[in-house]
Each structure stands twice: as structure tokens, then as C-alpha cells.
Amino acid sequence: MASEITLRIDRPANDGQGVGRDEAGRTVFCEGALPGEVVAVQLVEEKKRFARGVVGRVLDASPERIVPVCKARHEGCGGCDMAHATDPVQRTIKAHVVRDALSRIGRFDDATIDAAWKGFADTPTSGWYRTTARFAVANGRLGYRQAKSHSTVHPAHCRVVHPNIDAVISEGRFPDSAGPEVVVRTSAATGETIVVLDGVPDGVTVPGRVEVTTRTRDSAGRGLSITEEAAGRSWTISGESFFQAGPGVATALVDAVSRAAGDLSGSRLVDAYCGVGLFAGTVGRAASELIAIEVAPSSVRDLRRNLDQQIRDGQPVDIVESRVESWQPTPADVVIADPARAGLGADGVRALVQTNAERFVLVSCDTGSFGRDAGLLRDAGYELESIELVDAFRDTSHVEVITAFSR
Image (cartoon, rainbow, N blue to C red):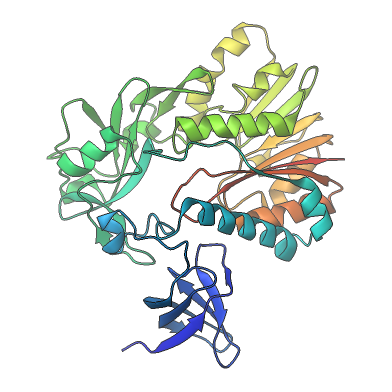
């Protein structure tokens, strides 16, 4: 049986956990705890310098604690890991971990952070927000992983996904041959809904308007796509291509990146890790020349479709199918980089700073890699100019950070 200790929570960690110190001074990370609370912690991992646990009982609750409305959360679903906190305290915690990453990992001083801080962008804060979701398949149904586990929770409904996806959760049936995971993608604009399987479609049952394809077909360019509306235009998005969580989030990110990039008239712009072209096809339209770098074949195919009108309108566009780290840098005035959760890293920063761009806009979805990348850009001669947060994943510990650097 796991041991239990009483712990006062001093601060949040970057994954939404609460952090305190036990009687011996050891750091303890506690899932489900909020700053200021006193909790009984069930320890699940103990090391000499730290321990990890989960809330067993709340002995002195924060006034910002609420009861999660989702039944699946009570059953252990690991998706909405901050659903026990009010929206204001969720944002307070997210702002704290961003500032902590800049200070502790990036080694920026408080004065620099304060001068650059812009706070949260205007983001949709109610109702569903996801039009793409990845699920585990078990016992013929779709489900979410439990926190830090391979076990699966099967919700009857999910409040954060579009109703079309929710219908697939409740009505869909998936035999083992469908594969271990399934991606469901829908369009809020057209209602098109596609299911992408790891395995084969034999025996799969989905609601009437939903179409089924496979990752193999998608990789070969024979998969299905949807048409979505976001940031004032339409987008072609294939089943396996990367796109933001939903159109509202995508629009908020475009607005924030536009503010960070500034006036691009007459500029040569590099859009790195550009996916299906969200920034290249919006903010990038103002540039005199555009270089769009993406490695995923499915995204590159969508990117060509989504930038076709800009090319036909006469904008010089160079679509580069390559890893950013392998790309041969060319001079540019502005760089926009939206890497995956692992961030730019030393190799990504090294490649992109060789453009000698005067302005660098970084979009980060992981606070740890963000702090590291911001420090690397500072060490490469860039000055932190602005920080804006987009609350893209409500009820979770994740946040998008848009930073502008100049030299």
C-alpha cells in the first residue's frame, strides 16, 4: 500500500501538479493539488531528492477548487488535468509556469520578463474547442488514457470536442483490427468528419456521415481531407496533417503571431515547421517573399493546396519539404517558427539564426522547451521583446506561448 503524507502546496509545476516540501525538505509533486492547499498525498514514487503522488484527500481546499463536471475525469481520464480549478486560477497557474520557465530554464531576469509580458490573448473560453482528437481503442470503443497510465477510460460523451466527434465516441465501434489508436477530425464549417485508423476498416461502425480511412492511405496521398474555416479563410486539412486544436484556437494564434511579427511589407519571411500553412497563408500574405518549410508529406500536400492562390496571385513562394535542421539557410528578414512539443533545440536554433533575420517569432506549446529555446535565442544575439499567451487547451495545464525577439 502506498504511503500517505500531509503536504502544503506552495506553487504549481509546469504540468499542472502542485509542489510542496515534506518534513525532510524533499520536493513532492502532487497531481490534482492547487497552490495554497493542504492535502493528503498518496505517494506513488519516492526518490532521495523528490517524490510524486496524487491527492488522496483535500484537507484545506483552495477557494478556486471546483468539482469537475465531467464524469470521465472522476474515472481517471488524463485529458483535462486542471478541470478541478476555476478558469481564472488555471490562467494564473499557466502564467506562473511560463514565467518560471523563462527565469529558471532560460535565465531571463524579472525586469526583462516584466517588460515583455503582454498577458493572454482573446481566446474562446466556453463550449467545445477541439475539432481533432486522438483516442485509444480498447474493448471495441474509443477512449482516453488515464493519467500516467496505459489504461483507458471510455466516456459516454466528451465536453471539449465538437459534437460530430462526440457522436463517434458514443456510437462508434472499433474491433482490434482497427489498430491501437484512432484520430477523429471534423470541420466546424462543413460538418465533414473523418476517422483515421492505424489498422484496417473491416468491422468498424461509425455514424452515417462519417468517413473512414487509414494512416497507410493517408501517407500515400490517397487519404481523406476536410475543409475548415479559420482566420478568415478556408483550409484543406488531411486526416494525418497537423492543425491546431480547433478553428477558434487557430484564429487566436494567427492574431497573436501577426502582432508579434509586425509589418511584413517588403520582407522575406521564413515560416518554419509550417504544417498546412496556417501562418504562411495568413500573416505571410503580407510578405514580399515566402519560404515555407515542412517535413511531413501529408502536411506538405495540404500546404501546396492552401498556398496555391497566393502563388497564382504572384507572391514568390518556395515550399521546402525538409527537416528544418537539415535545411540550407538563406537570408531572411523575419522568421516564424512553430515547432512540435520538443521545441527548436540547439540544431533548430542554429539553422534558423543563420538567416540573420532581424525578427524571430517563436510559437511554443511546451513551457520547458520554450524556456530552453528562448535562452538559446538570447545567447544567439536576440533580445526578448514580447510574450503573449493563448489559452488553447482549456481545463488542461498546456498553453501556447508566442514570443517576439529582435536583434
